[in-house]
Amino acid sequence: MATTQAAPREASAAEFDRSFEYCAPADGPQWSSAYRELKKSIERAGLFERQYGYYARMVVITWSMLALGFALLPLARDHGLYLLDALFLAVAYGQLGYLGHDGAHGEVFRDWRNNHLFCLIQGNLLMGLRPVAPAGDRFDEDRVGLDHLSFSVASRDDLERALRLFDEKGVPHGEISTLSSFGIYVLPFRDPDNIQVELTAPIA
Image (cartoon, rainbow, N blue to C red; front, side, top):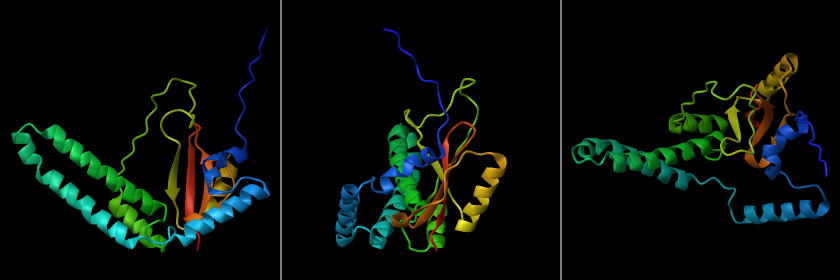
């Protein structure tokens, strides 16, 4: 029995928002009601409240781990324990990255500027991009690895300016959406390799 394969198609603008489907309830009154009940339960449990004590402890613990890891480097060199010290530092740097991630998503403080400063202090990401894929290859977030990249801007006005620039340059993009539970506006778009990138701005 002969089969035909559908021709590849360009993603629609609505699909650019796919990464944020978990933030909103599915269509239909049953799902909307379940989502509201779940949100109320989470609010009653206090899980949306700022956890200043938790982040203070984690900052102290993480930086103490980093200091200890670097202090042990001479001892590790003398006793051939470089690998164990490297593993210890990798755990510490991983925790540092998680703290920076929470700051970037506005989870630590209510004020965006404080979150931004926290992220700059905790952040430890250096990213290098270079063309190594075969010609014609396209990014697919359903493969193992990266899903999307997120960058913060100061205000919704910056998102509006980016939207106009995308339209002018023919950059595929979604619309500016509001994620109230995260306290941000989001503008998703695609880069030339089809990687989904998002710009976020705090809700004033």
